[in-house]
Length: 276
Image (cartoon, rainbow, N blue to C red; front, side, top):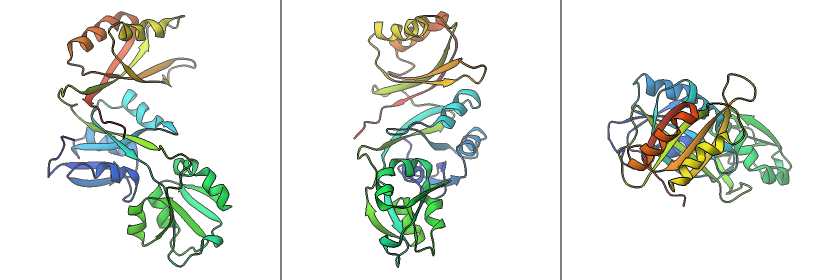
């Protein structure tokens, strides 16, 4: 990743000990936690930090709606890079706790959902918290409680890892985006993220737009719909496709679909990170 500036200020969805911190730590610089995704985007917008790292989708749970909505409606920021992080959940307890005594498991709602089978087998009650790291802090001194969290959270709060990789599905990945004022220069191995809404709701309307990409052999790697926030049944579409916005072929297709859509926004072009 080409963001290795030693004095770079990097905001992430905190607190420390979360998967977002783990993703942000892949970039060299000063890590600064924020309490919400909106606060991260605010800090980038106001130039309080150089870049922000926030989750945008998970391979099991799907899109992170708040990130998509904020980028679509409230901020004029660009995706400069993407980070794909394997998620490996751990069961954390106090050092003196016995697993047989655990009756409650705390964690972020997504983490609990991703470990549903394990928690059911444990016979414990799941309780949602604002973050995985916050859950680790919450169980301190409670020998009947456990948390689902990161190895880093265990280190921070002096907890022990009772069992690792407790997620229901082994192929569990979260995609984070690195947000900045500008996107990335062309590398020859790029992806572009964009938003659009249709000119009118009619049969085949979406196909007419997406078909232009197919005609030019441009690979669409993602399509996601979200409510437009204007009226019921009205949607905007998020798409990822291979290529950089400065590529001739990409410029051509974007120009061609102009008369088929009522609104478009390029969220950024950036190097493709391979899914390991």
